[in-house]
Amino acid sequence: MITNNHNEGSNLEASMKSVKMSDKKIRVLAKMLVGKKVVDLIPILSIQKVKSAKFFYKLINSLAANASVKNIDVNTLSIKSISVDRGPFSKRLFTRSQGRVNYIKKRSSHITIRTNKI
Image (cartoon, helix red, strand yellow):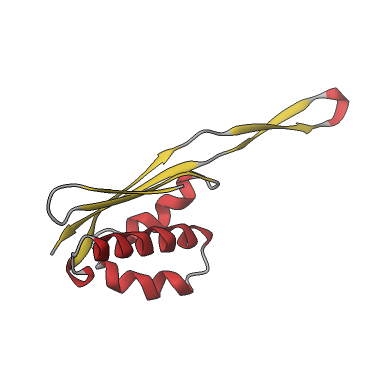
């Protein structure tokens, strides 16, 4: 689920909830994106082979569309912060020998991107 929020001025925010990927794996790419221009990230994320790049690509495109609706120039926006929070997880049973059971945690996460004007 992608939600768009806007604050005063040119500060835009987009979030994606319950992404079916671990927060640790998403944070690796998130650290690289902070401080970059929104326009520069769209072609870079479209060719990335990391699974989390697909989620960031959707969020950046959502931010760009939201900026155009609010009459904000996309070329002046940069990523101020990206927060990746732990979401709900589901437990799966994994049977072992001698009647034992291990649990597999299927983790999810919440991603929020905030921008500011350069």
